[in-house]
Structures are given as C-alpha cells and as structure tokens.
Image (tube, rainbow, N blue to C red; front, side, top):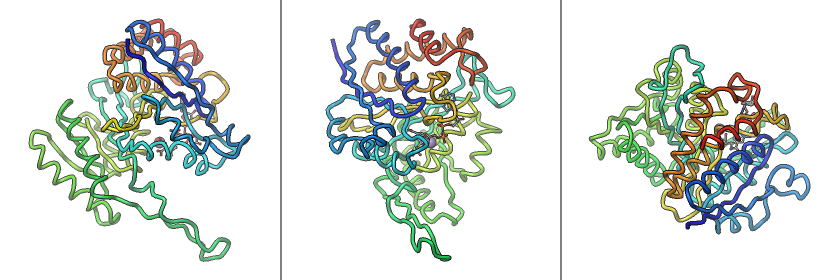
Length: 351
Ligand code: NAD
Ligand code: IPM
Ligand code: MN
C-alpha cells in the first residue's frame, strides 16, 4: 500500500475550516481506495506571527521538503499586513519549490448556478494556467522619498525567456489533453513593455503546436469575453497578475469563489507541489463555520491526481457533484443554510 506524507497548513480564517473538511474527505477516499495518508499539521499563520514574529520557522521550507505534497488553507488576516503574511509564507513556498505553474480549473458544477444568465456547464469549462514565479510579482523596487511630496513607489516586472517559455509550453501540452485551444492573456498594445516579449514567445511556441488552435487577447477584452462569450475559451494562459485576476473572475462566473480550486505545481516533481483554493481567508465570514469547502475539497482532489491516485481523485470530484446536485446540504453562498462541516460530511458520505 502506498502511503503519502502530506503537510497541512490550514493558515488563517476560513482556511482552517475548509482544510479540515478537505482532510475529512481525503481520509475517506484513502480508506476506500486502499492508500494511506500520513498528515502532519503546521500552525503557520498570522496567529503564529502575532505570537512569535514569523509566519513560519526559519527552517520551514526545509521541513516541507520532506513531504510528498502540501495542502494549504489560506494566508492573511487583518492585524498582520498582507505583504508580511504573504511574503512570509505563501510566496516563499511557491518559489522555493519552483511551483511555476498555477493551475486553476473552473467549471460549472451540477446543482450550482452561474451568475451569468442562461449559461450551462457546456459553456463554462476552462482552465487558467497562471505563471506563478515571476512577472509582476517581483521583489525589485520599493518606496522612496517617504513623507515628501515627491514620494513614489516603484516595482519592476521580471519576465525571463525561461519563465515565459515553460508556462506557455505547459499550456499547449495541457491543451493537447483537452480541447486543443489556447488563449493567451496579453496587453501588447505597447503600454506594458513586457507584453510584446510574452507575445513573441507565445507565437514561437504556438508554431511548434500546429495541432492546437491559438489566439491572444488583450486582458481587458478577455475579461469582458469571459463574462459575455466564455464558450470557446478553454486553456487560458496568463502572467502572474493577469492569471490571478482572471482566476477570481472565472470563479465568479462559475458559481463563486467557494467553488474554485488551485494547484501550485512543480511539473518536474523535484519538489512538493502545493494545493489550495483560489480564495483567501475571507475575514468577513471567518469563525462562523459557513464557508463553502468545495474549492478546498477540489484542490485536495487535484493533489490526489498529482500523487497518482487518479481513481480516488475522480471519485472525490464525483462526490462533490453528487452532494451539490442533491442540493439539500448547501452553504449560504450557494443559497443554502448548511455549515462548512455539514457540506464536507455530505461530500465524504457521497464517496
Ligand atoms: P477572499 O477570497 O478571502 O474573500 C473574497 C470574498 O469571497 C469574501 O466576501 C468572502 O466571504 C468570499 N469567499 C471567499 N471564499 C469563500 C468560501 N469558501 N465560501 C464562501 N464565501 C467565500 O479575498 P480577500 O477578502 O481579498 O482576502 C482576504 C485575505 O486572504 C487577505 O489577507 C488576502 O491577502 C488573503 N488571500 C490569501 C490567499 C491565499 O492564501 N492563497 C488567496 C487570496 C487572498
Ligand atoms: C492567490 C492570491 C495570492 C496571489 C495573494 C494572496 C498573494 O490572490 O493565490 O490567488 O496573488 O497569488
Ligand atoms: Mn488571487
């Protein structure tokens, strides 16, 4: 029997609640499909920061390295500035483990409704392939002339040929397993100087995949299309910031942030990958036990898939669909009155 070592970092706010449900569902899947999950839980969070002054211990990254995978809740909570919590935990893990692909599948699940009138599951089935290691999320820059009238903030975007090539190639390879269509999110009309470089590389790689239909769209127009005509979109590849924004948008058009999973993938498998929901710690509903756990459960299913437990991953996805289609146990964001734990249990029971 294979046993996988999983690091669980519930983190902050609703991250704690939804991670408990994902773990509940995965444990059930493990016993049903005959593999083991050995969990180690870490209290790395803003609460830890308040007590100790750091989000994670100094050797945190080294500690995680020993695991097969990482399940993360959410990072960030009022009281600790976001730049402190995020650069103190989330971003260092993504970078130390070369998780340069952020895979964010979005689809309309049975029993839930798109905010878009009349859209069906067939119209809404996309995957955002977000560059996850560089681009606009750079460390180059800072604030200058504090307190003076000429105060300013500066940040350099960094797009490397290696970084851009590997994410675009990943998108084309993925498209070959799906609809054979890739759309690149760009802003090449000369305003953002890094984008013509991105587009050039996109064109080079597209030429190597003549069997895959490719197109590029300006990010602003693409955002509108995602709402009005999402039908022909399938694999959407974008830079770190563009991919971030598009993934919340795509989540919203497929039923809300509570539904959208995310995988920070190290494709080479040299380091652990990390799975989380697209959403954050939702301070506005934290502590109420009403967060939708579906996104985190689907992220956990992505983790099973990546670990090679494909049948179990499919079963978890089906269990989510069964529980949602049944409709008797839905959280408030889906129009119901159930708690996080009740929906989590309904999914586990559907397995
Ligand atoms: P958010 O995603 O936490 O919340 C946005 C809105 O969506 C809120 O109204 C929230 O109640 C709702 N929502 C989100 N997830 C939900 C769920 N599962 N069920 C029901 N409703 C849900 O975004 P935010 O408010 O911009 O960020 C809050 C904090 O989380 C910030 O500190 C931010 O930096 C952090 N954050 C962390 C991650 C991460 O760890 N990967 C991702 C995004 C934001
Ligand atoms: C996400 C989040 C993070 C990001 C933030 C919290 C840094 O929004 O995972 O989508 O922008 O990568
Ligand atoms: Mn985001």
